[in-house]
Amino acid sequence: MADPEAEHGIHVLLLPNPSQGHINPILQFGKRLAARRGVRCTLAVTRFVLAQSGGGGDQPAPEGGGAVVHVAAVSDGCDRGGFDEAGGVEAYTARLEAAGSETVGALLRSEAALGRPVHALVYDAFLPWARVWRGGTAPRARPSSRSRVR
Image 1 (cartoon, rainbow, N blue to C red):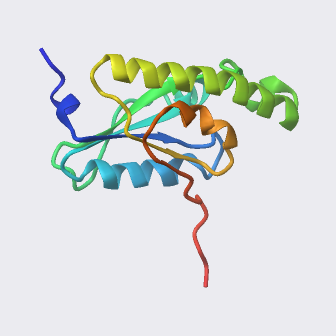
Image 2: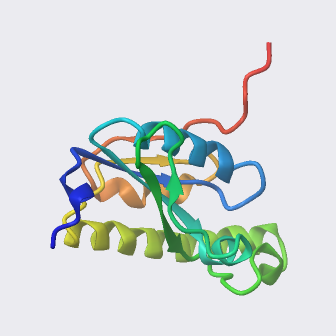
């Protein structure tokens, strides 16, 4: 039986920086997108963050009439202890770039093989390595997770 959401016209992969204050804004943006007809959203978070949040699971879009943001796990190279496992900012950043590039690339290939190719990547400005998408032809976006205060 085919996945009914595989027939969506657009599949957006949401890739937040795995730290406080970065995941929720991209998740909320994804919920708004998922509520629109023809858009499938997948939030890619680290295995450590997913474990800390109780396993996560798909997130319902409030106005979506059954629409959800799907959740997928990727690695930051520190799957058991997160940032603390790396022993410092530079070490964590290097591990996140290496493991993140590999596992996000694998997620992109997996989604395509399942008939749900990713058409757009929305990634955190703190993740310049998200250029793993370079091989794709779809657009990328780096929105700021900070609100503008006037």
